[in-house]
Image (cartoon, rainbow, N blue to C red; front, side, top):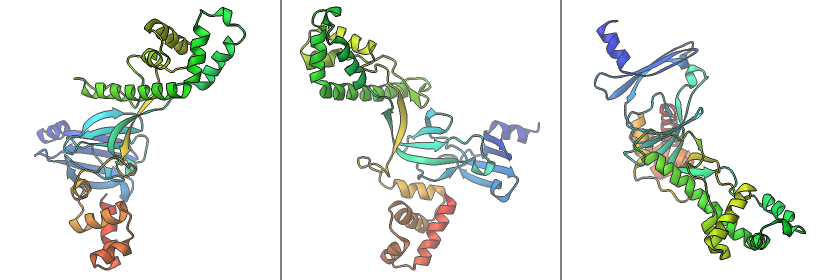
Length: 306
């Protein structure tokens, strides 16, 4: 192996094989990634140089390498979630596998803030109804006071379900924050469960006016009969700026993303107003005092760049 070949191998950051081969390595100055694709058609045969770091991207953009300043959070078979520390933005990328070389880019699916969705129910009303049915007419089988506690819970069910569900949601967010703040690689892989199982003792004690032991006993019974789900399933997601009413895009973020991707200032502005903010090209051309054809040319050029 020649010295030049050895250096290139050491600097290699990505390889992908399908109907051809794609390789990417760092430039000598470390500021760029040099990508070479050798496929069987024009779409999969190319060379390009892209920045090694990015501070912003837009949804729909295709990346042939993952910028080196991004911090990995979650990786699954189909998606990768990363953090851009410079702008404190989270990004979901497709994780290309078993696809043609021409489709092996990491497509930006969402740009926004990371969050946690609970994907299983925290409480089960049907299980509660079954438990109530069991005690009817056969109360002697149960410890004194237990049927009354269940009936009291039934009377406060909506409030209990809401409080327990909220606690479960917060527990998922806390678990993710702990994983991300830990001084080790994040172990969450898209779907996860809690390290410590949930308990309804505090909610029952406050809601029903029970003493601690009675509330703990009832919580255990609800757990054992699956009225409450003490270890729900959670999914890690990125809530998109575009789809959110509560999240705000950092100032200048999208223009930065478009210029970093290689768009000219005019292309970036026209693409931003038409494809992101939703103005028609005719409407925006009138605002800009330009021909619609000029705006269309800029928008199409930006789409090709992305």
